[in-house]
Image (tube, rainbow, N blue to C red; front, side, top):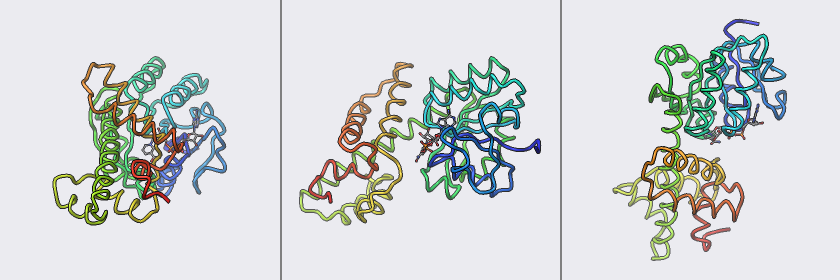
Length: 290
Ligand code: NAD
């Protein structure tokens, strides 16, 4: 097995295309997914049969798994591998600040470096290698990871050196994104009820001070078109907003707006589990639903 091979665990909506881009960039990539690797592996990747097996094959393992529980379980498996070669774990999952600190502690105890490097940009960003990466860890490791990051992302930021700072950046971004989406749904529904036309509302807002990612992208491209396919679910916003509020609570940061934003995403998710986030519009304005 070449010494330079990279390990990748978690081949879901995000991980599969990210790992596929590593393969396309010419990096030897060995992958594993607990739900079945062979059916999920991108073309050209090699397959590992378990996390512990992978930890015996590669120096560096990247993770893209659902939550902190999964990252922690994987960290324990890597730590327990008897013939372990892995010395660095790069976590692209969104797990929150406290989980990142816990996983860091678990691995540090075994002499394994852990860096958090969550991503933003959705499935299309993963497919097109245009993701933003929010890395937190040492500068040396950041430099060493550049070729890998360049194969999967369009913008790579070193946001800090402490475990969890990448996660802090990621959850504050998703708080803003969830707020913009929910507030835009409310504002557009208000305008439509006032007799304004949705396309006109968006044109005016996008030339004015209310412009945001929902008015500039998600509403014109995925609500007005009726496709409702942003590829990010209400359950994911519920999770990310919970992580934001947990992190804010842990440091006593004031967060007066997030309870209302969390509540609306929880209501949508209860009404329509795992709804595409663009469904927030038909949720607040059912007259426009199909
Ligand atoms: P997903 O559920 O589609 O994929 C996760 C994969 O991890 C699954 O294939 C699952 O089988 C595997 N997995 C879970 N536990 C495992 C374990 N212990 N060992 C090995 N494999 C395991 O999730 P996703 O949408 O690809 O998201 C992955 C991460 O990226 C999440 O933390 C998510 O919050 C974050 N994220 C997602 C998006 C998005 O648009 N989907 C955008 C940015 C960040």
